[in-house]
Length: 368
Image 1 (tube, helix red, strand yellow):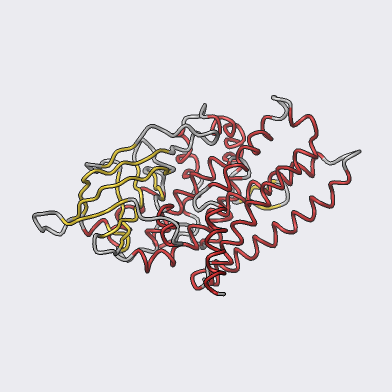
Image 2 (tube, helix red, strand yellow):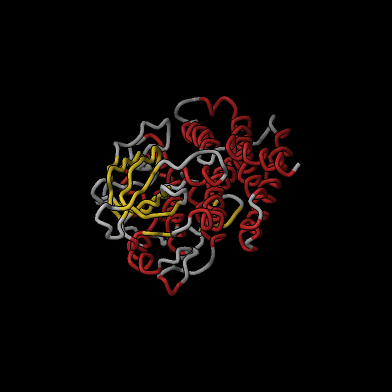
């Protein structure tokens, strides 16, 4: 895979993918671009394979490399970065699952983009932080054959391609325990809504899932103990999510630098300062991911996720100031307006910044 350089940093993207992303970014945001085109384009460039062991069909590397790939895509289109985050996060669930038979069965189609992977664990991450109850419940089949009957909902899930998807779901047992299961688009009792009417990033196959008496067996378990497994996989979930903020911030800072000229040189130092803050947060994220320190203490990861979303918002604001009134004109400001909408999405991705700050405040209160 060749390296393509955009702005100040190297990106693991093929030039033809960069060209395609730049051409369709507006359509992915507004919904004019067919969402069915996104995953095949990303997969043709080998992006879901980054950070996956080569003996499992990947290109090697680690989660930090996958974060860099999501950042690179998000610099051109946050909608495409969002799809890649979902695909790669679901793949990570399989990589960290003890159910190797499930992994071996599903992974090939996910790596080459024939089927989508959706991370329906936003509710689970809030549950882990004590912010929300699980929204899917299970009970044994009455005939006692070992299968479970599931009922519930997932109100907001991305990358639910109508052409086919697998989705991870956190499920509550009647006895108070919880497990992680994999559901599929063709499971009886699993239904997909129409795409949600989003303000932006519309070509991301984002919809709701209803679950009514869906039956699964042990072969569909990603992990039998959600309480044990979620803290182990949360660093990858949130770390990969951080790639979106990194990419958007990087692109807006590049655009701001390119627009700083006569009469706007006062912005050079704020741009440089924010770029240094961004680089520092990226380094902290990469170090923590590679040292596996966030499994033991998630608070620094929460803080990094908050900081990166806030840096992205500040970067877009600096792009506006550097561009001036041109950014507010419909045609010359179209790409800026998209990035402004993209930046508005980052604080509300689950877990939202408010939820993360609430969890951090609760930790401090408990510690005191």
